[in-house]
Length: 369
Image 1 (cartoon, helix red, strand yellow):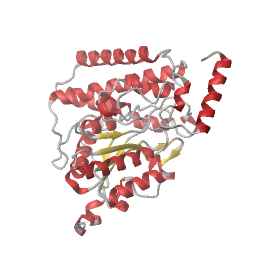
Image 2 (spheres, one colour; image 1 turned 135 degrees about the horizontal axis):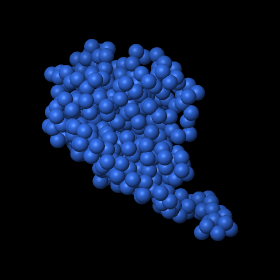
Image 3 (cartoon, one colour; image 1 turned 30 degrees about the vertical axis):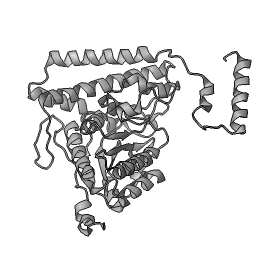
Image 4 (spheres, helix red, strand yellow; image 1 turned 90 degrees about the horizontal axis):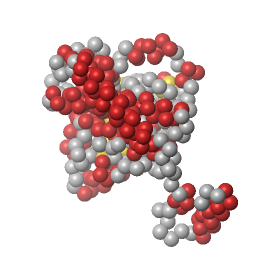
C-alpha cells in the first residue's frame, strides 16, 4: 500500500521551537491538553523514588570505580528525569536498546543495579536477562544500538506485534553512521521505533554546536520522514508525556519518531574523563538550578505527596539500595577468560581454537587457570 502523501507534509514533522515543559524550574505544574499526564499519586511518588535511587546508585558506582572495583563508569547524574520519565511511558511488551548510561531506564524495568555494573567491572557482558526485562545488553560502541532497535521494530511489524522498540542514545550518537542508517531504514519501512536522544550538551568533550548545524537534534527527524519531538529532559512529567505521544504514534502504525530530551550531564562523560578541560563551572551552576529531582520534589510537596519524613525515608531506602549494589559487586569473582571463545561459532574454526589454546597456555603459565 502506498504511503499517504499527507503524512509526509513537512509542517506535521517539524518539532516545536521550544521543548515541551510541564514543570517549571521551581516545580510549578502547568497542565497542557496536548501533553496529558495520566499518572495517579502512587505513580508520581514512584517516579520520585526511582529518580532518587538512580542518583544514589550512580554516586556509589563512581565510588566503586575510584576504589578499583569498576574499570570505568558512565554517570547519569542530571539525566534521571529524562530516563525514568520516558521509561515509565513504555508498555510491558516494548523493548529497550540502551547505550552505556541507562541505569535509570534499567531501574524502571526492574533490573538490579549490580546486574548492569558487571559490565563496567568486566566480569560479564551483563548479568540481567534481556528477555525478562525487555532490555537489551548495554552498548559501548556509539550508535550501534540504533540498528538493533530498527531491526527489532521491523521484525515486530512483520510479526504483527504491537511492541515498539526504543533506542536510547546521546547527542553524539546522531553524528554516527549507524544512527543515520537506522533512522533512515526505520523511516522508509515505517518501523514502530522511537529514537530517544538525550541531548546532554556534550559528546565527551565536543559540544553540541560542533555536532550539528541543524537548529535542534529533533529537526533531523524530517530528513527521515518522521516527526521530531522535543522535551525538557530535566522535567520528568514532560519526558513521560512526550514519550507517551511518540509511542502512540509508532504503535499506531505511523512509523518511527525521534525525541530530543534537552538535559545536561552533570558529571564527567565517564570516570576516565576530565570535564574541567572543556567546560566552565558557571555552566554547571546554571544547570544545577534546573536539577530534575529538586524540581519534582517541589511539585510533590505542593501536592502533599512528599514531606520531610517521606523525603528522608526515600533517601534512606535509596542509600540501602546503593549499598546492596555495592555488596554485590565488590570483589565479585571474574569469570573464566576462556569464555571469550564460547558462544561465537557453533563449530569454531581452527584459527580460533589455536588462539584459545594459546590463551590457556598463558594462563596456566601465570598460575591463573
